[in-house]
Structures are given as structure tokens and as C-alpha cells.
Length: 484
Image 1 (cartoon, helix red, strand yellow):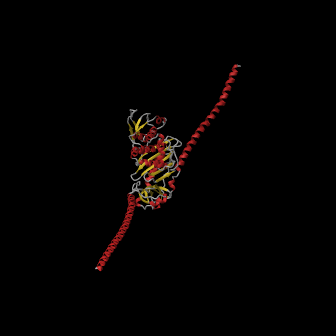
Image 2 (tube, one colour):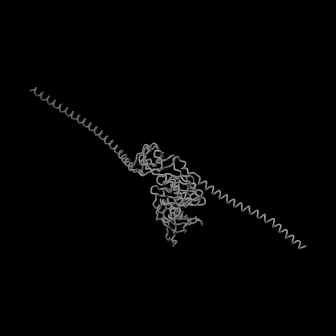
Image 3 (cartoon, helix red, strand yellow):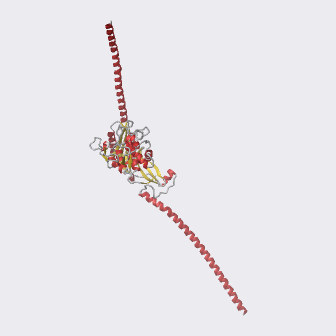
């Protein structure tokens, strides 16, 4: 009986296993299939987004008579002339994107404008605490000190996040405040440069939902930064060494991250003069690049790129250099509101086949007192260049209601404008002097006439008295003779 029970139990267990095992396999297979399908769907969505971005036509391609520009994977892209501000290529240039480490370009600009290269940069505990294991860093320690020069090289080349934070902290203190003072300066300065779509929350570009910019804004910031020789030197450096510090005996050596600067690299670009790389999961790849072919100095900005950002940058640079030419404003008829241009070398950039007389223009009065302003030229709504100018007093009065008298101290008047200012300054006092002299002459004439009249009256009185005396004497002598 016991043996029979054991056999029955064994059979039952085998039956249960047969029933359960296929069921388990059935549950596992669909899971594997679902995961693969999910991965396929995810990959497909990514590729679809990537393709959609690539297929998006840049807005500049829709301008009649404008050369057709290349497609790029970046969701936003721009090529801008750094001197005139002419926009040669534009794809969603005013849409807000996360910048990542290209933020550090603005950090360096504020530092160069508000500090000296030999200033000390002291690293606080806060500057180190912002770091995570996957953040770019050169391993600074609390209490360690670098020169501002070394700190800016580390910020640009190594993209060191703790260094960018420390730069902001120390420059903010020099400005009379703290790190937040520096961040406010970033926001204020970007607005001064004409940025309209940016908001800055930190000095290094670590992700923050309220930290964003646009391709056009980054081009404006980079153009201002490019005017600093110190930046141009830093931006082109391939390798840099920081010597021992007060806390670390070893040297720190780091290299340039921008691949278009490295000869021999497949991404090397002969005209490249610098730039800044960036990446976070939220921003995707961002890249700012400057280039100079000996005639034009251009900046290219590509944001939120999931393709080959270097290939994109090369293609839009080549497009800019190949399709546009300088037209000097000094050789063209001035708008009637313009007295003179501040810089005789001011220019616009025009595509082949477009002439200057087809352009429209807008004028902004910058200084009413000195009649200075800025004129921007447009081809069918597209910015092709701006220039500082001395405006006519009539236009300033019409535009602002301010009656101006140009002064010699005006900001940046041209030679012609300054000469006219001098003449105006001389003319006003001269007119006053002439009026005063004329008034004095009139008064003197009146006095002379009055004196002459009075003198004549006195002379007449004297003659009458003499005549009267003579008559008396004559009468006396006549009377005396008669008595005899």
C-alpha cells in the first residue's frame, strides 16, 4: 500500500511539473519579446526624431534669392558673422534649448570683463560639493588656489565644473557680492548683448530646467567674447599644464576637447579658431565653434544634435564662407537718417546676386545727446549686418523728441562727424559773441550820439552866454558915448 502511494505521489508531482513548466515558459517568452519590441520601438522613436530634425528645412532656405543651405541633425543651428552680426544660416535660432557646458563661454566673458588674469581663485567647499562622479573635473580641493588664468584654461579646455563654479564665486566676490552676484551678471550681460531667449542659473551648465539659451543668443555671446585676445589665445590652445599649487605637488595636464582644432583628427577644420563642447542627457550634444578664413570671422552654434555635430558644423561653415561677400557701407549711399558711420570699414554680407539697393534698414538711437545709434540692414527680413553710426539731429528729434546739439565727447563719432561736432560747438559761442559785440556797438553808438548832442547843447549855451555878454558890453559903451 505504501509503495502504491509513493508511486501515485511521484506521478502527481510529474504531472504538476509538466503543467507548470510550459506555463512558466509561456510567461517568459512574451516578456523577452516585449522587451525586444520595446527596445525596437524606443530605437525607432529615436531614429524618427533624428530623421525629423535632419529633414527640417532651415528658415533661411525659405528666403527668395538666398542660397540654399545644408541640412543638419541639430535641432537649432546658426552661422553668424562676428563683426557685423549678419546671419547667414538659421534653423530655429530663437528656440530655447539647454546649453550644457557651452554655458562656460559666458562665464569666461564675465570673468574677463570683471577680473585680472593674476587674481587668485580660492576653491570653497561648495565649489567641490557640486561634483558627481560623472562630472568633468580636474580634482580641485577645498582651500586650493589657482590663478584666474589657470582657472580659465581649466574651464575652457578641461570643462572643469568645479573650476567654473569657483570662477563665478571669486569674481562675484570681487564685484562686491557672491556667486549669485555673478549669475545675475551673466543674465544682465547677455541682455545687454541683445540676447532675448536666455536665462542662466549657474556658471558651468549643469542641468537646470530654468537654465536655457538659444542658438542666436550663444552666437551673440561668443562674438563679444571673441573680441578678447586672452580668450582667442585660450580657445586655440591644444594642451595646458597647471603647476603645483598650495595643496597639490603634482602638475595637472589636460587637453583641448574641440576636435576641429586637432591636426590629424578626421574632424580637423583648417579655419577653426576655437570653441566649446557640451553634453548632458537633457541637452544632447551642443557645440560652439569660431572660424576665420582670412576674410570673414564666423561663429557656428549647433544645439540638441543627435547626429554628427562636427560634420554639421563643417557643412554650415563651408556654406557661409562660399556664398557670401562683404559690401563696404562707405561705398554705398547712406540712408538719409545717417550723417556718417563710426567705422569706415563697416560692411554687410550679401549673397551672390543681391545688391545693396535692395536692402531695408532699421535705426536704433543709442545716445540722444550725441546723436549716436546703430543701423541694421535687412534683405527680405533677414539681418545682413549692422553698424554704429552718427545720426542726423533732425532724425533724433523726430524719433525721440530730443533736440540734440552734437558734442565733441560723443561716443565714437567718425572723423567727419567729429569735425561737424566741432563746427557746431564753435558756431554757438561765436553767434553769442557776435550778438554781444553788436549790442555793445549799438550801446556805444547811442552813448556817442547822446554825448554829441549834449556837447552841442553845451556849446550853444556857451555861445548864447558869450553873445549876451557882448551885447551888454556893446550897450554899455554906446550909452557912455551918448552921455559924452
